[in-house]
Image 1 (cartoon, rainbow, N blue to C red):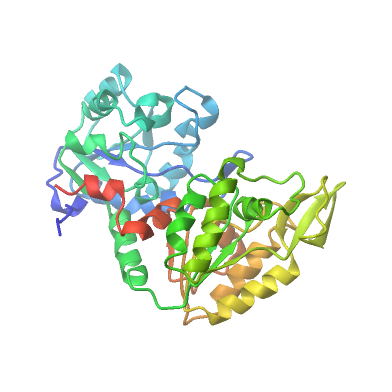
Image 2 (cartoon, rainbow, N blue to C red):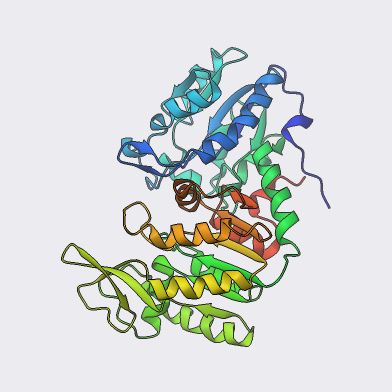
Length: 390
């Protein structure tokens, strides 16, 4: 096995360290809903400072689609980052070019720089070599501490490793260690709970999960897609139309793999500004699904009681708005009450929901990555991890 260098293995004295973090935190109504990703990155920044290096922080924030958009400026994250580091962080309004060059030419040891959103440039998501070259131009060493985006072949994750001596940060090391400990040979039965509004990649990942899990519990937009494929009415609810045929195949494969896919039996819907619990047979065209119903939650509680390992990515309802947080809160409380249960939860919204519930004491691990740790389960590695192996 090729050993990946850690941030502690480098001589960082007087070096400018390009450090990839994931500062893409849940942000609504002008505030950060959950600080976990910021807090988890602090140890690596402090290690660089301790070794007399200069951290040059890069990250993405939201999906500006390759265009400058102030709604997605990392300047919004600056106050929180400075507060947790207990130091003023210098902000640069670009991540490449003369603006960066000027800032880094004048930087002193002990100072910290945050560069603007990587995704303001198309070169980031297309893994463009020239973009990576511009990104690394003024730096000496690259550290990846963004486990949560290391499933993506993006320039700041992949191409940069071809241009600078590279290693991993403390959070990345912790993530890999914990996931190896709990999920390489999980205690069985293994149950996965997959929810959330963001469905990108989740449905394709279910193909892998049905080969590993005894039970696969679905909520949120993912469940809606499965219900729609089974000809249930989901009203005006979100679902992934392009995945309907794939979902039908997945359900057939699940039967072959002896994996029980658990779909909602009842749902909390919104109708004319009122909410009610209806069975899946009673959803009307004007209904919008926002949470799981009482019967569904009872079924899930029975499955959790039978399980020895739980993995969870994505809230099962619209948790940000009461009363649609009840399903997610109920599941979180139930998992948290079982001290002997191995429980891994991941993703920005999932962790935000659990911390809002304030019942996370007995979770085995809260991962900064939702999609990333599900991808990791496929091959026990990620593109970003492989890129660091030299």
